[in-house]
Length: 205
Image (cartoon, rainbow, N blue to C red; front, side, top):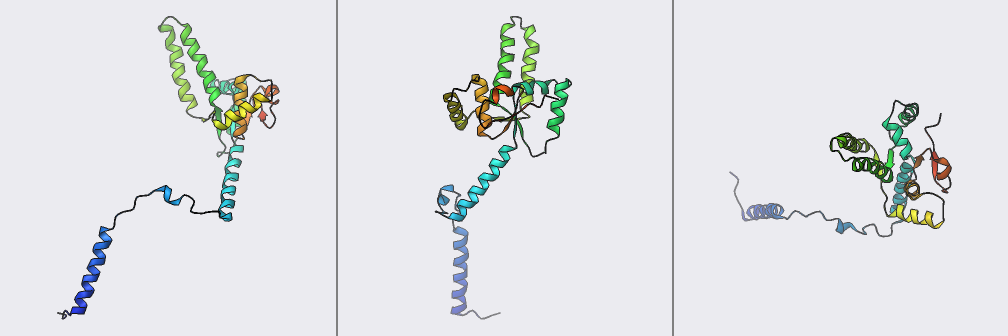
């Protein structure tokens, strides 16, 4: 057995103290506030941020937003225009988004709610209520582009320019513009009045 000297005992006590201190060290909670401004005015990080935003903008440019007329054709895919639209959407690369604006969702819901409201017999409301429920499942499969602050600003700018377009269409145009999306609509004549808006009609042969 090794002889214990004062020196070796002191080393052991020191090691034991370090181990105890390590175990008793409190776990630091994560707090994003600690890193705010940590990169200062780094030009390199500004370039990284700019590149990231450019990638995101490029992704937005690949989004397709369906106007209400195109959505209606997808609800009846056996029709000639429904088949044509489905084939074109199927041909898109998997990474490209297919969405609708929240304005289209509103229009579709208003239609079914009006149908339910005019039926006085509860039994005659069964079918429209069922189809209203189906509508939620239908739109759950799409990205829904919202009317956010940017879209509201864009809408007000378009309205200030006195573009001759209905309020709902003007909201759809504003949402498509701020998302840099391709708007798929049969109403090209009206939407093409909006500068910078990309519109195509995929129901055409």
